[in-house]
Length: 213
Ligand SMILES: [Zn+2]
Figure 1 (cartoon, helix red, strand yellow):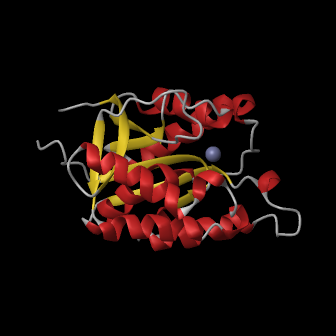
Figure 2 (cartoon, rainbow, N blue to C red):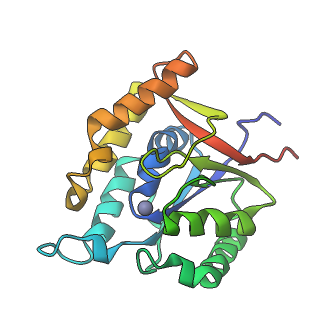
């Protein structure tokens, strides 16, 4: 089996937009290659929405953003856990993940890295490991959150995939103004990661578990 020979990919995002940040370029690439990509967000972070905006705006924005990446509408799954309170719902989150695993049967799972310090991200990373430890699993990079980061897997990206990542993140108008969400930041990080492997752009991942059957 080639190491790239996975078909069904499951991306676990604590909040809408985390997946786009961490692996938007890779999702775009894999969709383009014909792989089946599922995107699950565990919260639409209503409490993080500016007061003047509708509370469900992030639900709309994640639909637009995943569409930009080419993810099918039915492959977007949204849960409604309260933002910053995931640790109190660990068991329910684990149960949801196990159910998803049984239905979707992913061959590769992407989730926040093991060194992500946000409490909701830690919950998804840890429960994700428990739910999916029998299959290959990689942690995506969130420089703003990570205590440190092991860059031991790279996905090379062409300009068109990076463009879609930037385009997807632009859909989050309610979250504009975040210093780590600018085009410049996203492009610069992709450039750094690409330079490390001699390609124009890339996304880096922490290999949490790699299973070859
Ligand atoms: Zn988040």
